[in-house]
Structure formats: structure tokens, C-alpha cells
Image (cartoon, rainbow, N blue to C red; front, side, top):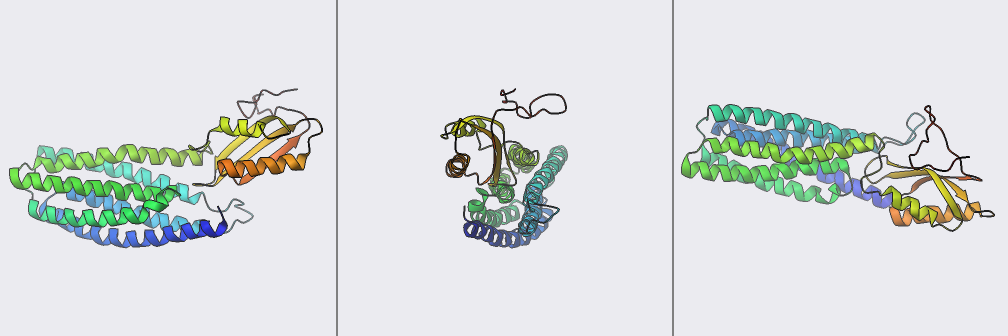
Length: 307
């Protein structure tokens, strides 16, 4: 990806995040007031998710700003990792909010309040429109950034929450079953949890420098072994600085008489073209070796080349 294209995506993400933040914050205030006036837990739960949306969007914007800072002598990789910290924080906040909603729903099941279903329906319809607009604005950036993906998932969950509130309002209007409100609130909370866990898992994998979830290490190893002149490979490591910025290091053992510069050039071009890995460090060795850790084991489990 070219630098200008990457900056264009970041700029588009930032503009979208600002617009969605403005919409979300304005409607959140209206939804809190409406939830109190209509005694609807489903509306209040939706407002709680709106609050986490606003927080997520604000943090996402801060992450983009901080991520633009240039690398320095203390942080030679720059500030890209801040985006992942923001995504992990958003996931943990969502867990807390879901827990609160489930607890409050339990209290409502025990003591159902009187609910103003007509007002609840009007507010939920407005919320559906706001959430749909926000989701559309963030959809493109969610594929390229875990940070934006976190905000997108929260807006998506809110849109489904608004649909649930609309359904609850209609049912309550015709049946007076107040417990449906709490049931929908529980449904919203349970729907969010698995998606929140996925976001947290992806964030932690990057923070722990695990192999990116979209990367198959065996395929990369086989592709490197297929480069003309490469006889063996070991100490292969692939990790991500942030979403879409994968890095790779490896030690290559060449065939006798192999040209180092030709092999390095071919391997680098192949990794960029086939696997979209552009931050690459390859070390050429005359013979295979094993680098031992403190316990006498190889640094990479696949290492079998020893002397």
C-alpha cells in the first residue's frame, strides 16, 4: 500500500469518525432522557451502548491522532500500537456495560415498571436511523483498522438494539407486557458479548505479537523455501504493529554459490506481492544454526536445523 493511499484511508476514517461521534453524542442525550421519561430499560440499555460508542469514537480519534506521530529514538516503530490499546479498552468497556444491563434487566423482571410504549417507539425509530447512518459511514474503514472496527461493531450492535427496542415497543403497546422491555435489553447484552470477545481476542493477539489471524505461517515458510537459491529457513517470525501492518523476520540458508542479493530481492518481492508484508528483515547464513533460549530450546518451534 502506498503512503499516499494509506494516508487517504486514515483521513477518510477520521472524517467518518467525527461525523458519527457528533450524531451519536446528540442522540445519546435524547435517548437517556427518553428512557427515563418512558421508564424503558431497553432504551436505557441502548443509551448505555450509545455512551460506549461515543467513548469508542473519541478514543479511536485520539488513536489516529497519536498514531500519526513520527517514530523517535524511544519508540522506533512509532505509535501505531496505540490503536490496538484503544480497541482492547473499548472491548473491556463493552463487557462492563453488558454486565450492568443484564443485572438491571434481572431487577426489572422482578419489578416491571409501567412503560410509555408510544414515546419509546418514536425514540427507537430515530435511533435506528442514526445508527444506520453511522454504520454506513464506518463500514469501509472497519475492514482496514481494528480501531475503526471496534467503533463499527458498537454502532452495529446499537442498530440491532434499536430494532429490538422497536419490537418491544410494538409488543408492549398491544399487549401491555412490560417484561418484554427487559427481555429485549437482555438480548442486546447477550448479542454484543461474543463480538466483543472477538475484538478483544484480536487486540490481545497483536499486543502479544502473535501471528496475525489472517496469516498462515506454513504457507509463508513454503513460499520462502520455493525462492530459487533458498535451501533452508528458520527463526521465522511474523507479527503486526497494528491492523494491516505486518512485519517479518527470518534466517535463510542458501544453496552453495547462491547470490545473496538476488535471493534477498526475490524473497522480498514475493512476500510483498503474495502476503502484503512490507516490513521485512531477512538474514543470510552460510549454514543452519539453532539459537537457544535460556532453557536450551529453539526460539521457533519449527526449528530443526542444528549443528
